[in-house]
Length: 614
Ligand code: M6R
Image (cartoon, rainbow, N blue to C red; front, top):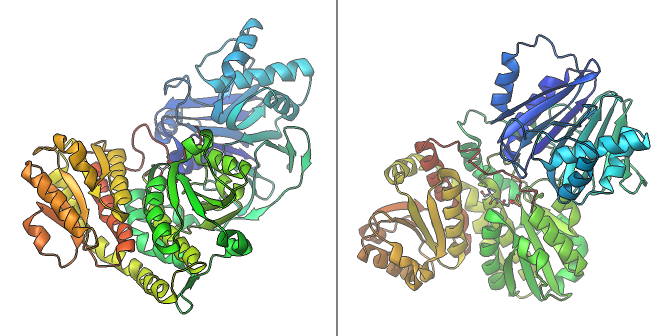
């Protein structure tokens, strides 16, 4: 949800910033802009559209050499004001002395704006960001303080969640970063500093980073980095080492990140399990949970919170926790848990699932769970992210960076982690060693089974072409695959813009069936499991009403070919693991339909990868 990048050092800032914006474009892509401090003044270039539009715009200006070694940049996901050149960041303050980029929302911007209007401040955009730029200018001029102090004093007046980067032309050797809620990372190079919403633009320059905590301000001044809080307390620097490799951030010959990430699943599943599966003992090793044995043993119920895909993986997890660990579990939207007065007790464990670890709704839910004294666990992919740092204990997915807006490899990894966690908690309770061993052995086959599905990608591509003209779709599944069906529908709608509903197959006859006709196809997940007969009945009911059906079925099932119009086969595995395999063909189906319809697959319209606003 908006990406911010900053550079201060001896290099030319412009190329560093543009490359950084490309890396962060997954966070929002309706407009982009750069501000450079050159010869004592700010040059600001901004453009509606993707970063490529901004690059083209700047290229057309035929600028021979950018002199500035200081600059900030932004790629936007609009909240206040439509996507336009005018509303694009960076925003200058009235006298042009201060420039700012901002990710997040200033909630009380209207009341601040009112005060500034009375002082004759003029506004060129509809954004909350420009209000903050002018507030900082006003404070700096009236209180006669440095830019970092002006930022600090301004933030004392501001409510909301944000990460900001600020420059002042009077202090060319200073860059100020601050955050509450939204993420910000400072990279420490040799005589240079990089700032970004996440570490991806920093990796190629330095491995040394400092993640800012909420209410912290980083002041980079005359080649030194200091951190203090908005309440003016000095903080120690906690420098961490980045593990991400630059190759992980490239497309490596695939036409889209989404396809690359789908094809990475055998490897990401392997990495999720690496060093954690102890078949001999029938156990799992989760280093991050070791200190919490006593608390985990005494859990009587679980609440899982997440949003989007992560919530659907939670729905699969719900069945696993109840079956393997016999722990009553419920899955909630993080956004609701954060605001409703959920009734929990000290023995209710809390699990937050988030690929990015930055989803504002989920972060709020974690804070609420902590306020309620629950033991908070995180299933997070991005190392060092806000949710990973906020929870009591966590399990990293190790799925590798996920760049496409549509989540794929992180989602299969999330399901796998949840089932592993169910085995882990089950073994602390009644789950037998033999049963655990059976599951763990089968888990280890998953990467190879995923490879087998991917070898069939061309068949799914043909099927996608056949169904690409439809405007509606149902995705249906039962039990473990009900959540999988919801995920399949979400994948299709976000990439292809086809209306798709994912529902528990049994619900069909309670209303949705009325929508079925020859133009309203359904994808039914129907592996050979405990629900197979019921799924078959569902398919028959659709067929009886003239609907077309694609079945996702177990290899070797010939019968299903006589009932469904088309069949996608997945290898045989344990019922509990089928959703992991079922996700993959649905991802491919959504991907190929989106390509067929000419959509920008990696950056679907109106969306952003990391939803850091509520
Ligand atoms: O980063 P998170 O896992 O917390 O993100 C949650 C959702 O925003 C995310 O899963 C979203 O639904 C994806 N675009 C789905 O592909």
